[in-house]
Length: 358
Ligand SMILES: [Mg+2]
Image 1: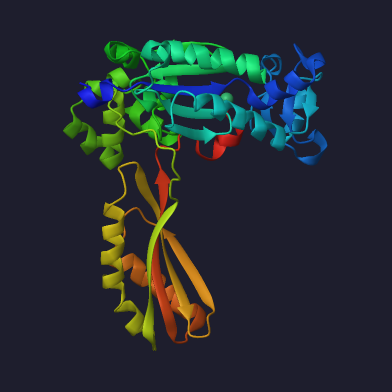
Image 2: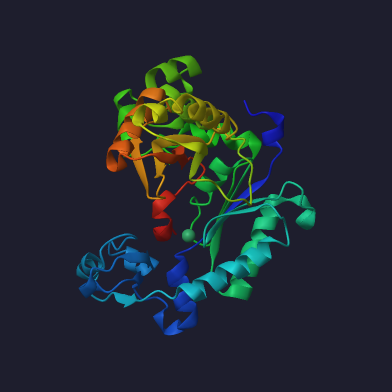
């Protein structure tokens, strides 16, 4: 069950509806009710960033080639994006948010988490706060947003989709279990197509199905990542809302007093570097996974090279291989060695598709 600390939290996930398209319609009301898409030209390999609901009825989707979109919807009005206008609308949204909390974590221009646990406005009701924020955004900025209100980020994010557009959905701590029972497991952050298929082969389609396994069985079946899935399927998500930069990599490096003359002397430095890298990795929160390991080598003449390979656990053998690869590129004395790991951030819910989300 949920721990006290998290069931007491009040998290709102705000997500604007067809954000770019909505801003365009606001600024040119004659577009209202018409199928429009913001994106690149159909004749120049453009891609749709956002489509209005009218365009979606024709099957026009974000990230679709504009040429395909125009085929599906011959009357489609394609509009080039105006990022500076969208950025300004986003800034105005954040200004409204900041009347309720400082704990605002943007996921993209039109999406953010708000932790309103300590907010006393609207009698401290997160439901009323979300209603007020949505009304103010509609009145002051001229676009609509949807909201999810829940005890944690995972559920709030899912819930904001439930009554979209221009709606909100509340999941109270007592409703969490019911909400999750039938929720498709692919709604869990980080569960992509491949993982979803693996789960389905075990007969697992919903969070409810996950909950019928104990954590040990589940980790045995699906490894470390299984723990993440199991935890979220139980509605346990203690990730704080942080208005802070998230890292993409961790690395350590050392410049040597005397140049390292050969490959052997470079490889001998690796254990110490790996040890300090591991210490740095231990300090990261649980929401990071390692994707790649890399090694940087700077030669005495300041030329440098970086080599990289896919690896989820930093180890000596892999760094030794990378070290040799880097050495072969220069074969000259080395003044600096660095090693590191590139990270996947599990809190980055939409990842690279962010631009296309609405
Ligand atoms: Mg959106």
